Length: 357
Image (cartoon, rainbow, N blue to C red; front, side):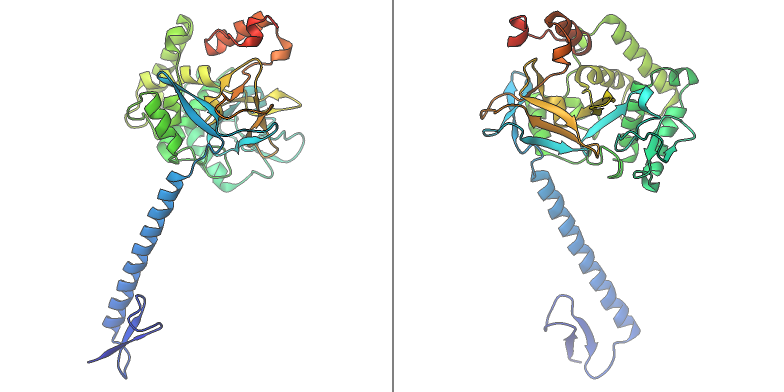
């Protein structure tokens, strides 16, 4: 019997067929509905694949490029940049931790000072708080992953400064349970970016240890670390393994390396004008910026907890993008150099240090 389409032009992909002059049987309706369902599923799959491909091509470092320096790489300007220009502004690509002393006074999502305002504090770990604006069910639910890891280690590890411990717990939570919701920092840490592919090539990296690939691009400076710190990293990693399940393929040695990467590449962020540095972070963009005691860029934070990188001067195309890892004005050249070596394991040889200013 001849058939004709309904609900669209003749022969249309989404046409629903019926017998001429009569309604389709139940079996025919079910078959037609199943075919339409499969077509829609294929459409959604194609759209998702196209969107993912477009995202992978989209550059997140819009005004910077990587420059090869042997087996290292650094960020340089892409084009001429003006003073005060915003180079980077997001909370989606960094892993951060508040200093222990600020865990109860600042929001763990937007880092705002809570003062006497209404807040939620985790009754289990007692190391994570949310302001009224960030007090959301999805944030609390995701925090349970890191909270469980934190409370799973011996009490002795949770006493005193717990910065490293809480950072590692968040890192493991992301590796095992996926990126946090958009209400928390780091929601796009697992998203692919072509810049990382380039950095991996420049630094001769092989397969990433975890899906948070940019961490493997950061140096450990292991050969320059003190024997005491290397020993502490190893002991921490071994003790952590006894009480916490590691991500698949991740080893004690990998965790010890991560602790050294943290110390060598950690940024003084989040921060505020009132309290100064509130904690430290590893960021997909800012952690690749080199140091100078005469920087041409600075790292700041907006009211929503976004990490901002702005230019302090005009910058010529291809020039290194530089920030200061220390408070330059409050230290003498010797104090700056000693502090930089103690934390970051390098001797500053910038023009300002060399001239003794």
